[in-house]
Image 1 (tube, helix red, strand yellow):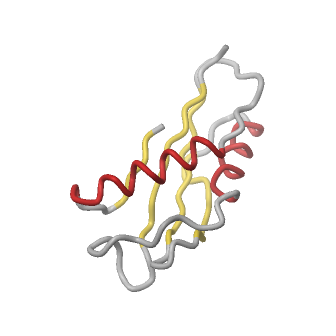
Image 2 (cartoon, rainbow, N blue to C red):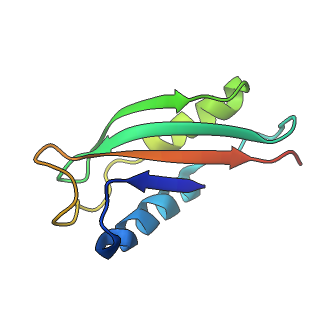
Length: 102
């Protein structure tokens, strides 16, 4: 799983926490044909609330895509954005989920 956004290196801990929470929320589909990749984008507002969730690069596997969206939608809120990250309304993040065939 790869996560990114316009986050200074001093706030790398924040990206790590976002990634950890989303990984723990992700219920992986039981079957995959080959490796699947899906990129989701979302906004974390200043107060940590999540919005604007969408697939920016979906895979060909609909159940995988739904599982990725659900992982982000399960988050009520993250910690508040650290100082120096984002603007007054928040920051857009992207996350690439990868599912390998079993």
